[in-house]
Amino acid sequence: MPRISSGKRYARAAFELALGKNELEVWQEGLKKMAILATDQELMALLQDPRIPFDAKKNLLQKQLGEIHHLALNLAALLVSKGIFSRSPDIFQQYNNLLDAHRGVERAKVTTVLPLGTEEEEVVSRRLGKIVDRKLVIDGQIDASIIGGFIARIGDMVIDGSIRQRLETLKKNMVEAGK
Image (cartoon, rainbow, N blue to C red; front, side, top):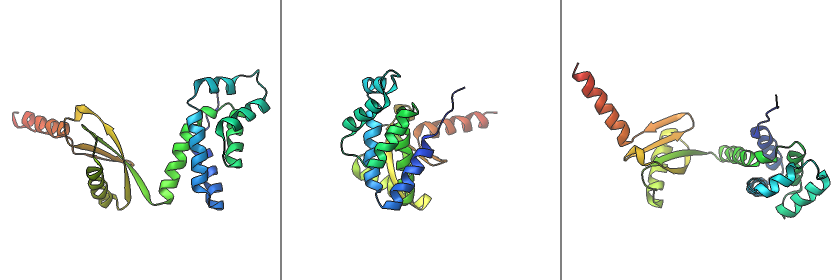
């Protein structure tokens, strides 16, 4: 059975290094470049090809990544050597989560029928931020099945203010009243 390694572990190590050297944004940019490269199927095929020597893969990485923190390049090389460079997007996401937590920012996934405008997003962010007592950044998602309103997911908390939920509740109440 293959051993599964978590992107969180690599993200935490990168975050601690970046925090210690006050290079949070430099690392973030490097991890972003790695995450983008990991979506290139042709490059991934080359990096996973056992016939290509590791030094050639490392040189290819360095060329593709361009200007990047030398320790981020070392991390990329380590991931290639372990055959898990494809986990770079997860590592980037986990790093961003750690960075947000460090800055006192919480991410909320807000699902609406239509995209929120800038003003609407700020209002929702402020109001939800008061509930959790943190600054919120909205990650918007679109889902026409909610009919109207919104569904917000902040960590483990779900706030369902959708029309679909209200209709379901109304239907349930009507069925119970009819008994």
